[in-house]
Length: 171
Image (cartoon, rainbow, N blue to C red):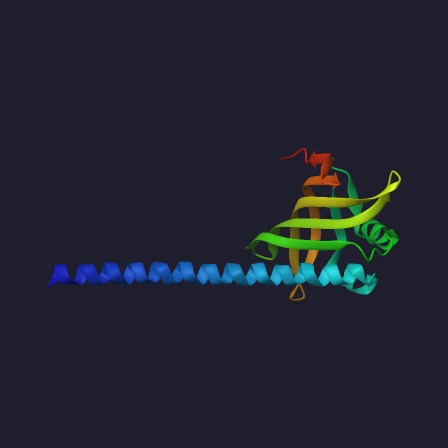
């Protein structure tokens, strides 16, 4: 009788392990989707120069770090965003590649793409920017708030030709 129980116990343990992986996967997908929604909402606020929404999405102590290690505060970043003229030809997209939560902190790896047409050196040219960043979000008042964004890598192309590529020093 004992030999028959062991396979049943093993089957139960395997089922429990698979259920655990399935739940973890579903939770990870929920976090990934929630973070993608936050980036999408922030994108809409930036396009609309909606300072109130931007300010409530970004922590007052926010820090942006470029590939050289230079930093900007939330207010500096918002001022820079607002100084960029609206560009009806510009298309941008941010894609959340991964999201990991530990306690009240979420680490997100994201990919940003921007393309537009600009008058450069006497001609209209295609300008493309691609960046990979590691962002830190925190949970405050049951909302995800962006605390830090560090650019890991950025590339700039004109008419498909790479003119600038930078990687963060700490990578």
